[in-house]
Amino acid sequence: LALPLPVELGLFNPYIHPLLLIGILALGRGAGAFFIFEIGGFIRKKATAWTLNVYRLRRVIDGLERFIQRYGCYALFLLMSIPLMLDSVVLYLFSLLNKKKDARAALTRRWFIGITMAASILRGIIILLIAEVVKIILI
Image 1: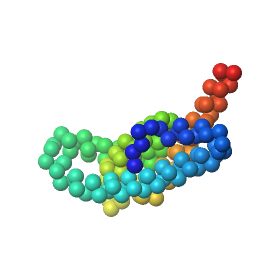
Image 2: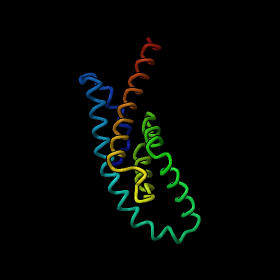
Image 3: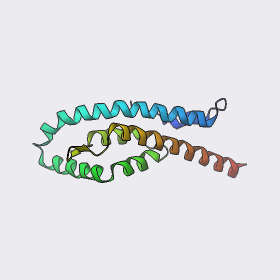
């Protein structure tokens, strides 16, 4: 659920077609996003009680929760699409701060996983395109 190395390095396997590798990357990130979403929801329920006592921490968390409530889908997609981004940190923050408002979560489990997978596909394509441009420039 947290990898020390960017998994995008696996996209440069000469024996497997890049589209298959991007698919594997997206499925792996989707599976990880499922578990992170569940872990974040569990921790959020437990942490709410003790953060109420720390006023400044509560203000920061409230601001982040409002941000995710307002821009959740777009922000998650944008951040997860950035090549070599520490995606575990982004996923954990979004799952922890996915506050319910009006009986609706900012991101449902389905959207959380789907956005993560779609952004992973875009991220893989961006990395392969950058690698091709660099190869053309160096040759």
